[in-house]
Length: 413
Image (cartoon, rainbow, N blue to C red; front, top):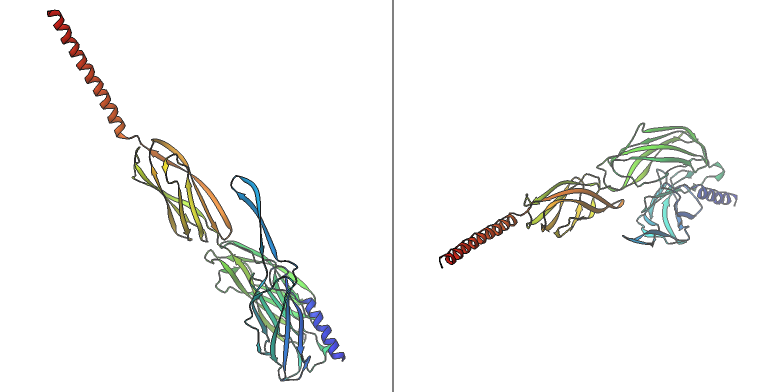
């Protein structure tokens, strides 16, 4: 039938025009859509079968790094990064009623793998062409949106409806306290023009606040067009780590004069950055003398926005004892001590370096800070020297007295 042929052509064109709402071009696409029956009568039910496919030939990420300190070799690590589907839903809007389907589907798609998801829908009690939207959210923060054309007793030649889809250039990562600048694109994947297009960016309490105007107005969006503009978001220092979303209200006027309003979501990957610094240095006892057993306590503050994990400290003091300390985790706004048990086996003024190693959401960090320790001479050494001098003086006196007595006895004889 001509109507069926036109409908199939329409579905192919819609598939080619689908635009993902995630960061970059995702490897998961809608590869097939089947509606049974192809044309519904008002109030009828239909089965929509949608096939998702991972188009990537391979899903391996390779990281290269140093084999270790002082080792010039490099080590490469390969990790599988197959896309993971977090949520699949079919939004029928006000016209198409979704009776059931795989809304709770969650799974991983390997290279070249596909999965088919069925949805049972019911047509409205009137004729027309309607566009329920398939929404697929991936674990990496990407979102795929795909409009599905449902014909309810209408000639396909009368189909001229816009389908506006929002996407972003990147999801980050960004650190709390940063200014996140992203490029936002609005694409019209339908075959009808949208006029008087308005985008309103809102703050939903997640710590992401638009900088400057929160509203973007476009006179029109023609079929196949893609308009890009910049968006700056201030990330609050208390926003924490994880995926945060910003709601965007998209409103436009269709060709028949209907005012359409939808809500899209932009996502940002936030990663806390730890910042450790020495807050204080104390010794027990306070005044260190040669021969003392000393506890050296270096307290660190985390003034950053993320956890400092696997914190360890090392000192290069030329004193015997424990010169390494494992601290653990230091949360933002808190502090923790690194304790070193030493023996002051020598006196003097010692310049040493406090070396700190820790990791946060951005990787492994190492810092060093110069410190100073004074070790006074022990009083026992002075006492021993004095006693030796007294003993030598007493021996000399006794020797002189003995010599005089001997000399006097010889004279009388």
